[in-house]
Image (cartoon, rainbow, N blue to C red; front, top):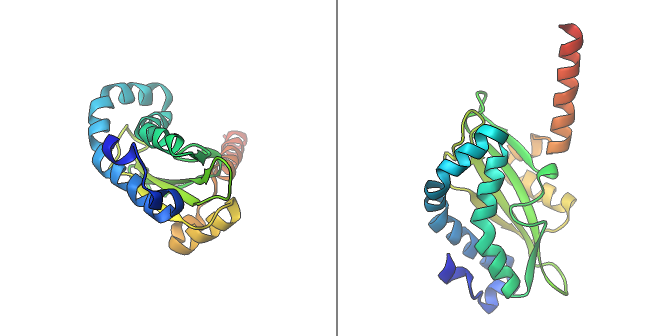
Length: 182
């Protein structure tokens, strides 16, 4: 990652898709080695705090990206991988192969946004495990509504999934109803 992210090219500074490809190359090269090197610590975090371990992993994975963006006068808002509360997740019935989609707007310190970088994190709810590398997408769209519309066109499952805050609200309601019945 260090060699490809330390000095972003002029094209990467003005083209969200070129920047997205560079970030994707970093993820391809780094995700497994980072996972292997931090596995013991991340498993420990997972045992104590569940899915927060995936957030810790992604924070480590994207640290060099944020450093390169800052050096180039760009910023990701919210920080990569994105805002958990508006993310969407779905997967298989036993929850051993889930995917969560989160996104960040990339913009210069002063000026119009370049676009949006989307992080798709494949993960397991039964134990700490990333079944495959995170996937990166780049979009010209910015703003929650435009990004949701663009991602819904790309993925029917995304379009059908609830954002986290609504999903969690529904979960709490089901739990409360089950408690009243039990």
